[in-house]
Image 1 (tube, rainbow, N blue to C red):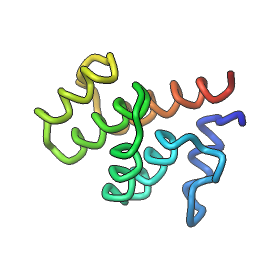
Image 2: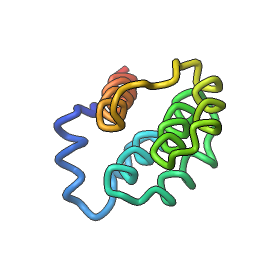
Image 3: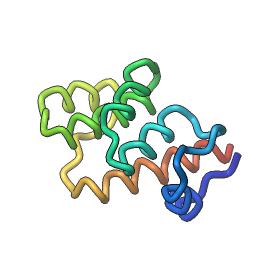
Image 4: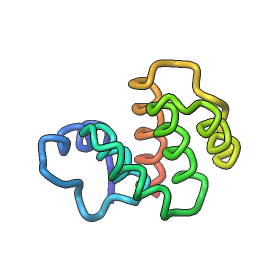
Amino acid sequence: MVVSMADLKASLADAHPAPALSPPLAALWWAAKGNWDRAHKIVQDESGKDAAWVHAYLHRVEGDLGNAGYWYRQAGQPVAKDSLEAEWERIAATLGEGERR
């Protein structure tokens, strides 16, 4: 499934994410909809670097920077210093590219 940023953002008008989205992208989708708990539940139950990266982002949103740091290390990503919106876009773009392969 090809996931473009435009498609992902357009889908935010829907009630639920597309079923074909990977769990990390679905978690980002829920985060963008303001449902932190649902997003966290998804990535908490997943393994892998992509889920860890989204998990880090979610703890940054929450303001728990210590926990976020742990998850950035698990993801092999540097701790984000830019805005939450810019980080969401960067993660979504990177994961969307991964789903094109």
